[in-house]
Image (cartoon, rainbow, N blue to C red; front, side, top):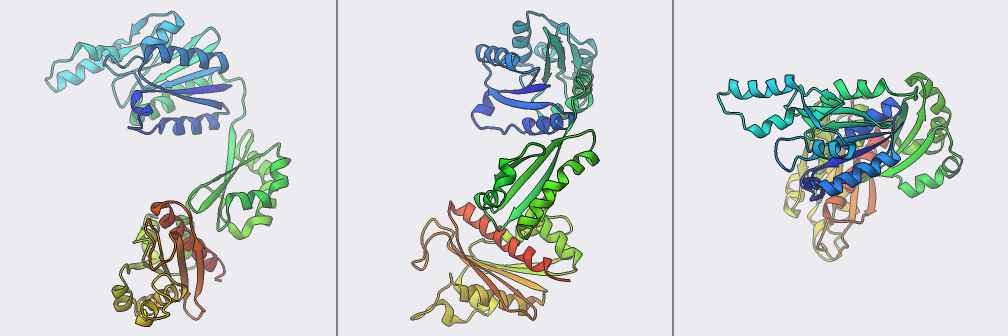
Length: 417
């Protein structure tokens, strides 16, 4: 079965809200074995919405619309679908009574327009709304399936999961569900990873492979259809094993988790502790680490040493590194190493990571935007320092610098017994 998702609302087109409903529905349909080949966003315009529904019905077996089920005049979804299918609107008496009771309990008069929220397309099944007022519709018409769902996620998600999904599943023709494995990489670019796996991509049939990049990480998705997760894993394992063999040095997780979570898990598993000293990232590395539940078991704390004075007073960076004739300056390998070593002495943690650089938009010390040094100091080991030449805006440079430091930390911890 092929599906198309239509999100209705001018506010989506104007960027005032984000269409998170598409993500929830797409994930659910993958579990069900339904292919989502198209996603459409259309404003609160009857003509354009009619065109979108007709186009979707011409190329998909199932059309799911979210939004536009409220009580106001711009909530047009149910009316337009009724018009397109040549049907009238009916009223769900139980839903109407629920709406009336809501106002009575609050001793407020019910606006007549709110009765619209109890309407559904005639000939279909009303879908109860356990967390709101507007009912949905599940309709079969001329060999096509239509589902209307409310726009607010707190209403849409339970309505779909509890009522719409079972209705759709009863109409499936034995499609096998779709299963995916998410392989997460760091310290390697998308194009370099693709080059290392080029023949696997070129010859893929089952499972299928897809790459997509984030800020400082790359995700590879392996996908197959199977009766259950165990069978899917058996199908995917030979390809995953080959990917692991070729690119395992960069593979930090085989599930959909962030690099910071993988690092915290590894540090906790090996009972290692961490502290961080940050200049250009301004606390972002510490924020990423502490966003992971349980990070208090491994994270000692951090220092934001933004000024040269604080680098000297707080971390013991020698003044001669920061200024004077021939000094390497605050943005240098020497300063990053001194920051990491000073923090290690100060905190006594197993590892200390330091970052200094130029995030932009202006140059600093006549050094280019994107030049970053990341250093890792560990007890009894020489300091490891990387020079990075990052591109993009200020926020992107800061995030990629922090993610690179996490990758180096993951590499270091992985080597520990």
